[in-house]
View 1 (tube, rainbow, N blue to C red):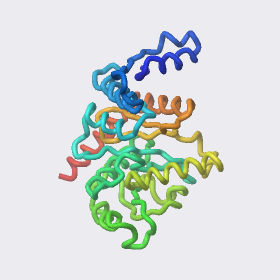
View 2 (cartoon, rainbow, N blue to C red):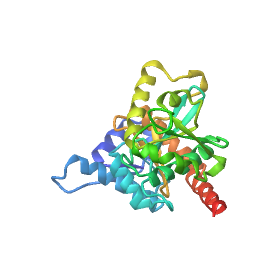
View 3 (tube, one colour):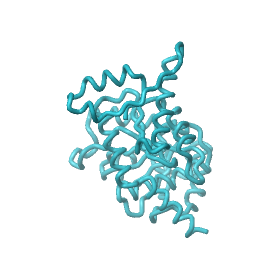
Length: 277
């Protein structure tokens, strides 16, 4: 289903093979005259989320404003218990396989409780979507020595070390940017959305120029992030996403829906909470 200005949808549909035209559903969004272009995007995202909430669609893929997407999903689909700020989780190729990095742009100034919740969500994601047994969870900072980092990074290690993580996951301590590239230390790396977004875009640019650490490890992950902690499948692409990026994001969202991955992650976390009580 295409959601947005009708003329934009027409341009996309006319570019398709005519045999495909009948398979496209259009849900137009038409703000009042004089509304700024950004409002088209926000209205489109809200309408797309509403389509999922009402059962007209199974997942959302957006390359629009990240803040609007996160807010629309949290309000329209609802947040899972204990989730205050839903994080965006990206999957990166590493020398050892793949790594889940979160947050990559949703919560730029989180507190300790929010980061701890992200560790739970990231561990469940790695286990359900990538089949990682007992995921290793690390905290991104500027050095592995005790006391390194800002106030948030100094306060988090005791909290994460005492956290009961799902799927047999365990906190493995502080990690640095080079550990994200190697993938040898952690399967899940937790950070704030500001740092995570800077790291993600830097690595993507490097991989585009030089290739991923191990090209023989298989096809690269989609350049899209999954919004965790909401009651639905929401995938976010870059605003400058190419046609191939959007196609990969659609395939990723469809894969997650077919596997009922969002519900499976929620079940894992709830089961762990039940054990911990």
